[in-house]
Image 1: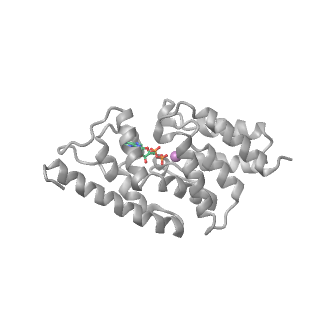
Image 2: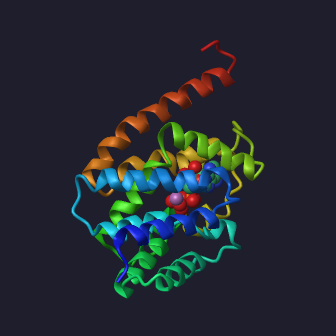
Image 3: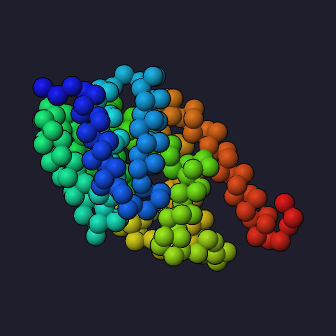
Length: 219
Ligand code: ADP
Ligand code: NI
């Protein structure tokens, strides 16, 4: 029987190694922020702590958009790792179900799995996609994919299905309308909804000033 602290410590080491060369928006620091968010949300929500923490730590070890679109790879690697360190098989399966179903892309398709733990981890991940960090991550990802910052004639595609979302090559500003500004109203927990309000307002302010500067105004 593994002590919980050992399990977490071994998982942290595994995730750091897996993400050693990751894009900066989906690297160890993103994982650490999501893990912190989970701990914050668990002060207000009743959920199985170990399951939430492990899912937060392992949720981006093999993100499908960096691995040829294979959505089962991440859950598979996570499951093999957790099994190898002796985690309870029910917890392992739950962590795999969370990872498979928590992404924004997954939420645009048919989601059949629900749990309080998934709600907490999904909110924790989504909080890191908005606000100042959310802005930084979006433009970093756009740069990584060589996207334009903005194009006045390319309209955002707000009502997207999973395939359209996945295959988008739109300028980064469009991603705000296609995902980031929609997250506030998609939070599951009351605590995340409260935190999201302020971060959302900050993104709106950012966009307003972006357009003013784009138009050649001084502020
Ligand atoms: P999820 O993990 O919820 O499926 P993603 O991995 O698609 O979400 O996105 C995580 C973050 O990566 C986004 O919140 C954003 O910061 C960045 N990102 C992903 N796709 C894009 C995109 N097309 N343009 C700009 N940023 C993006
Ligand atoms: Ni993530």
